[in-house]
Image 1: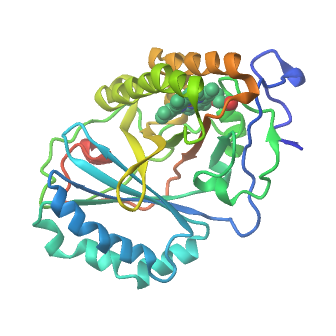
Image 2: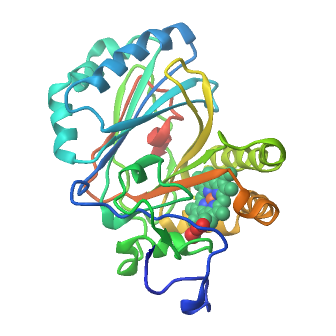
Image 3: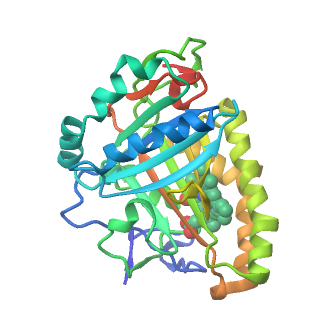
Length: 341
Ligand code: HEM
């Protein structure tokens, strides 16, 4: 069955748009009404201190009412800190709130002892409104799409620029423009040794775009690792290093890893943009995403349906009542800490 908006396709194609490859866009059942995605991160330049802190966070996540599922990644940031990130998914906000109340995580996070050591901790929690989000994937088994009701379905609202907006319900009634008139100035504040709360500006657009080459082999693997992956790294470094140019507050290129911290063959780019419009502009017109996009299309033409590379993304437009993001003992280039809102 095909799902998605009734009117879609690149400008001028009307009802005739026939995407060149299949993709899934998630719809959810009544058990997924008000999900929460919380990114819990640890950062340090000291490997041994990171190793010591990790089991503690894992224990909190395993407590009663913990996440329905989580995906664990790591990356080295521009300040050369190692960051370990748990992307935690609760399908129901009441369960998430129960976890916050009962797990002891909040008390641990806010305890003065967290301010003194060599490890920074951050928690970026997003209250997701299903009307203000979308997913697209070759296979729906990544991120929140794992909980989709319509897993066998494909959509025609994809494979053209503008389709992301077509897949977001609220975008048909509202431009979802940023609450900020201009890109913010740098905050230039002390953050290490402190707990800092930052309210994400309304309509900030958050994307996690994933790549899975676990099933890719031989010529396709050489093409992916030799042609596509390096362009992806360049794109992620551009967003990380020139944030104001693209209206991107923060970008992390993360490698998914096993519990032993060994990298898997999955990566994801996580980025927070001023608005959906800024994210669209980068993806449809910036040379870095166009280079990624073109190299992928070359793979589609070469391997057609024999292609084993799996791509997915989820996009959320943050509302005006989202909780504050919390940064404890983090360096000043972490997430939203950098900006003066
Ligand atoms: C190997 C990595 C990537 C490849 C091959 C790739 C390729 C593509 C392709 C083929 C599409 C069209 C998808 C569809 O609708 O069927 C797309 C859309 C998009 N990509 Fe990427 N991409 C990659 C990584 C990223 C990353 C890391 C980001 C942002 C952090 C990103 C942002 C977007 C956005 C926002 C769209 C939707 C544009 C719209 O519909 O207006 N992509 N990309």
